[in-house]
Amino acid sequence: MDAIRRGIVHEGSKQLTYEIREIVAIADAVKKLGVDITWENIGDPIQKGEKIPDWIKEILTKLIADDKTYGYVATPGVMCAREFLANEVNKRGGCRISAEDIVFFNGLGDAVAKIFGFLKREARVIGPSPAYSTHSSAEAAHSGYEHLTYELDPKHRWMPDLDDLENKIKYNDSIAGMLLINPDNPTGAVYPPHLLEKMVDIARRYRIFIVCDEIYAHIVYNGAKTVHLSEVIGDVPGIALRGISKEYPWPGSRCGWIEVFNADKHPVFREYVQSVISAKRLEVCSTSLPQYSIPLVIGDPRYIEHLNRRKKLFEGRVNEAWEVLSKVKGVHVNKPQGAFYMTVLFENGVLNDRQTLPIKDSALRQYIEQMVTKVKPDKRFVYYLLAATGICVVPLTGFCCEKPGFRVTLLETDDVKRKWTWDTIAQSIKTYLES
Image 1 (cartoon, rainbow, N blue to C red):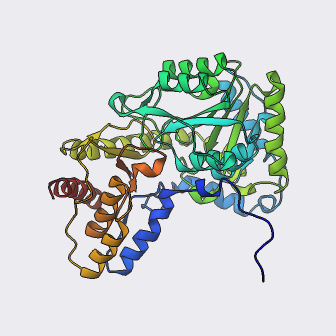
Image 2: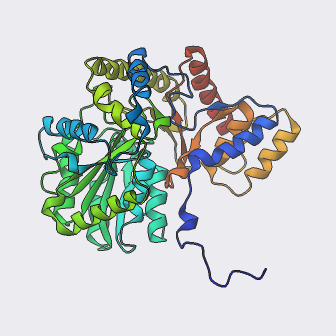
Image 3: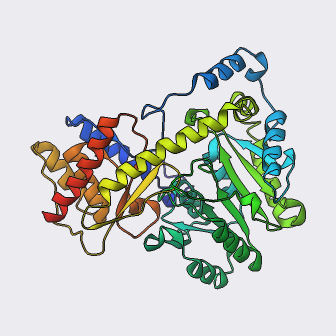
């Protein structure tokens, strides 16, 4: 057959990168060469051994026995769940919404794809750097250009550089929206209320909308204080992204939702939101059973205790990891205050293309030497760490960022293995930088 007569590849296809999963291919190759892998690349609490509380399992078991959970539901989602979530928003104060402002998706990946996919191609959304890959890739793919970013400052606890943000918005009128992630992935930063208010003020003055990923909103610790977007957004149009994957935790549920603010005040924004809902309507609806569980689980008196227990758990692990990694020369480590990730940043000039870690197996060493010939310096370290120790982390440059470093998770439930992981990473950095 002759070549297809027209080009069929989307202009933004090369922007679809997801280092968190892409490194799995390298890890699998290393595993086949005899190395046991310690997976520190992805935020799946279940994979790392966390157990769902029995009382949540009991609620889900009863729902499975109910025939209604096997059927289609309305495209925006189960009404009882939407009403419950709208009431939760309204109890906080700030912007008030109704059940009509809640729309369910098959995980936030589905929501993000539609939020960016149904924007006018010329309308850009500026996001943080480092960036979470799902957002940055989706925004870049929709436009066909590299993702537009504002800087998070590692010398100031990874807080947004507001001057950088405002200048980029001011001098680029293609920017129609601002993305923020609070608490942040990959840095673990938590934005205080006064900073969120300043970001909202920038959006108000330049007449752009806000997208705020709040998937980790209830995983905040180490004395941090923050608020939901609904509490500070005022009359600015915006969307908050929420879900149950990190809270129950139930990542396999693929259940997320958006909370839409002030669509009634902004006709163009309302039309855009309707286009997102129309796109969802083509799929009929999102998975129903997880939606039915939300009022029963989140509304249960035991849920607050469940959240508080997990906050203390992650706070302990953060402090444990920080005590080890912050003492390593050549890197800069901020203590996270939210989510369950830590970013280790290499200091300027400490990496080069000659550094290595000892790899005993000759076939494995040859494989890694081939893989590091044309990669960025932090990815080079990540590949050597993987081959030498089996620890799989994600290079920071995989998060739409030019700063060299890597991200680890704080999810390992085995106390001995977790301590081994921190100590091994610390020693590996020292050995690598001295090689």
